[in-house]
Each structure stands twice: as structure tokens, then as C-alpha cells.
Length: 173
Image 1 (cartoon, rainbow, N blue to C red):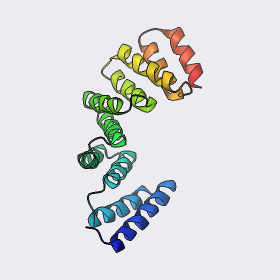
Image 2 (image 1 turned 90 degrees about the vertical axis):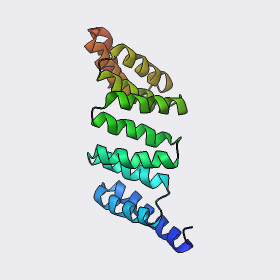
Image 3 (image 1 turned 135 degrees about the vertical axis):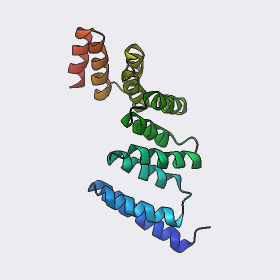
């Protein structure tokens, strides 16, 4: 059991992490998150935050380890699953990333980001038609989702559907 004093320290450290994130002091964030973990290693949000920062720092292997721990502590942790998929894409582990995005979509089928991310992962192994279906769903859920339009435009362009690609690129602007 974590003492009241330690709970207060964790709260203060996490507030500092939020401030450091705003100034992009990611190394400082990691220092604080490590301190929190040394006090209480059973907080999934801390592991998630540390993994997310490691993605930003270009440390996908370490990010996956932290996100695995967040998911172990909280198996239905949508954001951790989604970010783990992003880290796997950084490592070009596209099929593994797709599995994580499948799980995020199972948990929140109304999340446009999950559909868009899975579509991006599918473009790498050249599953363009399937990727377009995911981008369609992302756009259906969020008609203002510029990244999904741009991504769908890339897929259309790769398939030689240049008019559709141009339409989407203009919508993405």
C-alpha cells in the first residue's frame, strides 16, 4: 500500500510531467516517470505515459516494453494498445501493429484514429484496398479528418486511381 505522502509525491511528479510535456522536455518527463515507478510500479497510466514519450523520442523497442506493462496492468487499455501499434509501425512490424489496431477497434469501433492507424499499417504490406476501407470508416466517423483523406489519397494514387487521389488530397488540405 502506498502511503499518503507517496501518493502526494506521485501526484506532484505527474503534474510536473504534464508541464514538461508542454515544453517538450521529454527527458525530464522520463526522469519523473522513473521516480513514480520506483514509488509505485502498478499504475498503468505511468507506464503508458513513459511508453508514449519513448515513441516521441524514437525509442520504439523501449516504448513497446512500457506499453506492454501498461496493458498487463490494464488489459483493455485502448490508448496503450493504440500507441503500441504505432511503436510497432516505427519498427516496421506492420502485421503486429495491425493486430494491436484490430484490438483497439474491437474496444472502440467509433474511434476514427484507430481506423486511420490501421489503414496506415495496411499500406505498408501493400494491402491498399483494405486500407482504403479503413480510411473510409475513419472519414465516416470524422468527416473533418484531414489525415485520413491524405492517407486514402496516397492509397488511391498507388492503385492508379489518380482522380480519386487528387480529390482526397484537396479535401485533406
